[in-house]
Length: 89
Length: 372
Ligand SMILES: [Zn+2]
Image 1 (cartoon, chains in turn green, red):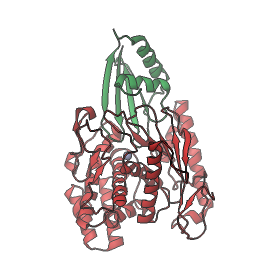
Image 2: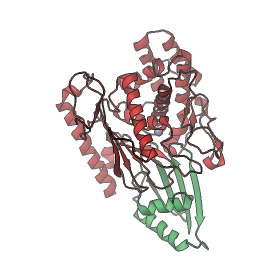
Image 3: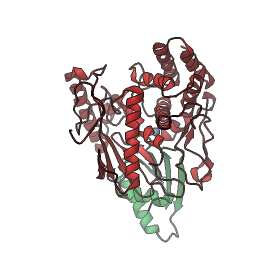
């Protein structure tokens, strides 16, 4: 599974993009579970967000794409973007 | 709120403080981004979550508008009232839930957490700035309590205004420092609140870039005011000190020289801000590049302040403040509309003198026609 995350906005306003191919990764099952949960549970459509908040676009296998924005991320959304972008805990 | 609030001066009667937040200006929603007509559309959306949220916001909005009609004494011009500063700093404990737990209330002694204390102090400084410079009673001009949440998420590289409060990340310590480090960041975020309660510029495209620029302008002025620096002495940087020493960059933005604030692959490259309309970008991300195109009006303000000289919050800042509070500007204003409004504001306050001339010249230098 290929998971792409684009994070835009923020106080700085510089976008960040990252993509992982889960095949062969030690945590592939966990990443795929998170990605499926996020694309399934995130409502479709644009996420308006707040001034200086980050906006996220998650795309799985170039087919399913969802958008969400700070604040109010679910635990799965937060964990997925942090793992793919290599940030957070 | 006797005992819980700091009363600054003795004008006439004290208006209600405490947790009863005063209403935003008529027609503005709490989120500060969506005008009511979009909320109306969202209220009919297919997705039940979107629909419910929009309906809730519309209900609150209508309630506020009705309250406003029922309380004509709150209509402009505002009566002289006490200045009531009421800060609350919360700790989000690195989680997603906001606001978190209260760690410091107004008037309480400093706590052991330096981040909470810095947020508290910067809120107070921004309140004092708006009071002293423009006689404004907090961000809504009706003594709105000022709330901030610190330690949002883990190693979170951002700070934002969520429509009700400031939210700060700690930074990852590798690229970004703690976001409470710089007074102008707090000034920037709280000014999003001021814009929300005044002109209500829509956070998209040119009106969004103006919204961003107004936050940079007054964020920078908060810092200049704290340091008692003239336009010539000021660094005109936004967020100086936010990057760790490992990063090649001095700040998030430069109003004096947009496009020169940083250049580092860890930030995604070079500062992309233009300083004139020739460099305007149509970016599909970041609400149409609001943090990029803000360089154009930012530089116009810098040019006005430098041409007038002295303390920038006095005449240049007053012209910008009059522009956003006059009621003459649409929430969908573009750069040209805004430029013309600043020209009108300069003339109504200072006549056709050097201030008026400085404003006209600055907009022309950044490629925006302010003469219409
Ligand atoms: Zn901003």
